[in-house]
Length: 244
Ligand code: ADP
Image (cartoon, rainbow, N blue to C red; front, top):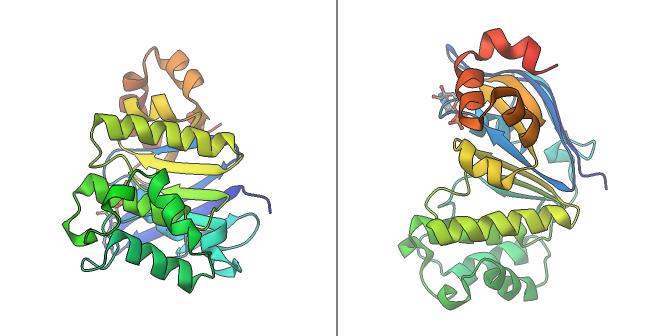
């Protein structure tokens, strides 16, 4: 399967708010692509539409040429982390992952593998409802990885992680990309994304303002902070130029 994420003209309103505005970009396999923008820029809304959880008003998103809903074995093709605490609070981490594996025809042996991969093997039997945000993020990542998918869509996975956890996540994402997977990860922190991502898709007020490499962006603006501030605050005016 081709693992490119293709977003074309994606648009979504919430009443009078234009959350995502005619967004088009590709996310290629074999690299970490950062999805960057200030809070409220429309990142989560765009990711939900990519994952078929929200219906666009216009446009579409495809993964390997198909809409998410058309994937035959979604968890084996696309791993997603949207809400860190999207699990039953009374279940243990291992029980949560075991249920997920069973429902998706994934071998039970993957549960121990992904718990180890995210560093939760010591907490496998603990109730997930008592997890810190950082541990919940690790469990969410384990769930995203359980089907060994070629595509990962992760919304702000750094939130709640301590510095050691952030460092760990950075290496994990880079190694998943080095294995040829498509890694699409959102953040509102440009410094973190600069260290993790190869490419950056930057949005401001729902619109694409840059789709480029980290090196090109910092070379063009002198520093990434300057780039981020000018791009996202002047998003509308800049759009034509930066997206070219
Ligand atoms: P980000 O992930 O970049 O922080 P969001 O996609 O969460 O941005 O939000 C984009 C805009 O859409 C914001 O103005 C937000 O308030 C609005 N929004 C997001 N989800 C909803 C919703 N379910 N109902 C109403 N407005 C929403």
